[in-house]
Every structure is written in structure tokens, then in C-alpha cells.
Length: 343
Figure (cartoon, rainbow, N blue to C red):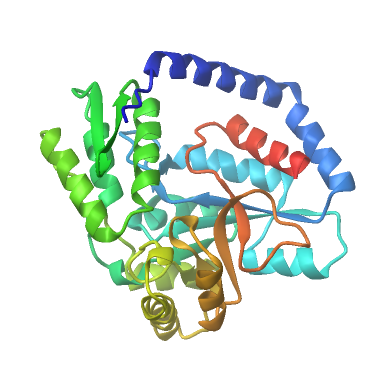
């Protein structure tokens, strides 16, 4: 089946949405929604999820947020919420009778750029964060398959791709500006994360052979233990994101248990403290994976659910807001305020 995305039409729709978001923010609608939520619907915990960070000026990579944009996010959150660790936020919404809206900042995977560009902002504003580590990659420079997809899709000389996703099924995409190309990458990677590792490597390999680009995907520098310990000493909390960042739902029970327990023990050994925090790779879970995460000794887990957490939230199905792709403070304000109001 061929599904062609018209980049012109999508850019127009996206532009209208962005203008609307700016108008909502500038008109004070967002602040009004936050006030209503605080008055009638609290307590609540908004978990903001990021992956990568980058210098304020220069080429952006996949899933990263420039340092100056991230600083704008932090200022907005600090002005409108009480920024806490996930642990403190959960304790407050479960056990306290307050009208406070709490915000917790998360980074997934454990990239070195978290230390280089996000950590200075967190220190500057004295706010906590939780970083979820993929322990087999600590101190290494892997080339992740999602970056290989982005490397192909982001090449300016490429105007169209048709990707074989298995069997006789393929999907075609027109490629427009940088924002459109990132959206296409998200769409393709969203499909691939539901495949096993062998299938992913086969599909991505075919994509690279069909559309060869001049530059290979660059390795990603990951946090080392020295950086992790330094951040931990400054109040940054670390949790597990498994050993290898695979879709746990596709693994056998013993494989899942190994991914969970080994990553937990590795962090505990190096930091000399108990680790209770867990984030499902890709946000994907099922009841079996949830049960095994509980049995592994974690205290709570963040899933791929998109909403705000309140008193009734399941500790092992914590919801979140994807914030890393929001390139304006107004976009973040709209997403958070509307999520609070609708929830």
C-alpha cells in the first residue's frame, strides 16, 4: 500500500496551528486555563519528556532541543509550576491535599549532550530532573537505528522516499522542510519500534541502500559514569531505561527480567544507592511487562501515555507530555495548559 503525504498541505495546516498556539499564549488563554486547573482540579503532576539537547546556534539533530529553547521551557515551568523530582511529585499528589500543580523534567536514553547543554540550564535555575539511562551504552558511542533513519530522511537532496516495512507493504512520503522531515522520521520510527531488532536492521539497511546519502549517520556520545556521578552530586536523579532499549513487549519473560534487573543493578552499583525509577523504552508496555517491572523492584514507571498525572494515576503507568519537539515556549504552554484543562 502506498501512502503519500503531501508536504505542502501539511505545512499549511501546521502553520495555522502554530499561529493559533501563539495567539492563545499571547492572549493569556493559557494562563487562564492554568488558573482554572489550579483552582478546581489539583493536585496534578505534569512530566515533561526530552531526549537530547544541542547548542543554541547550529544544526539540530534528531530529537534534540537547543539550549536556549530548553531554558525558555524551564523559565516557563518555574514561573507557573513547582518543579520537583518525579519521586517528590508522586508523593505530593498521592499523599498531600494541595492545590499545587507540579512539574517534573525527564530525559530519556542518557546522551552526553544532556550533560553538555541541558545540565547547565538545570543548575542555573536550581531545578531537579531525572535521566533514564540505557546502561549497555554508558560511556560508548553507538549509532542508533532511529538516527540512521533520520540521516536518510534529513538529506536535503532527497525529495521523496518509499520505505518497505515488511512483506508487500510500503509507505511513501514526500519530503519538505526540516520540520516535515522530522515528522516523517517520527512516523517511520514509530512503525519500526513495533518490529523486532532483526526486522528493524533489515528495513533500515534497505532504506539506506535504496537512498544512499553522502554522509553516514554519526555515532551518539553517551554519558559516562564520571558525568553521571557529577550530576548526581548536584541533585540530578538517575533511573533505568533498560540495558539495550528494545521493545520489551517483543521479548520473552527471562529476557525482560534481564533487561530490567541488570540495568537496575548496574546503576545501583555505580551510584551506591537504590534505584526506584524506570521508563519503558519507547513508552511501550503491556500487563506482562508492567508486572515484571514491579517484580524487578522499581517503585514506579513512566509509560507512553499522553496526559497529566493525578491522584488516581497508576504508579507503573505514569503519563507524560512530549516536550523536546516544542520549539517555542508558547507551544509548551499550550500543550501543558490544554492537557491540564482536558484531563
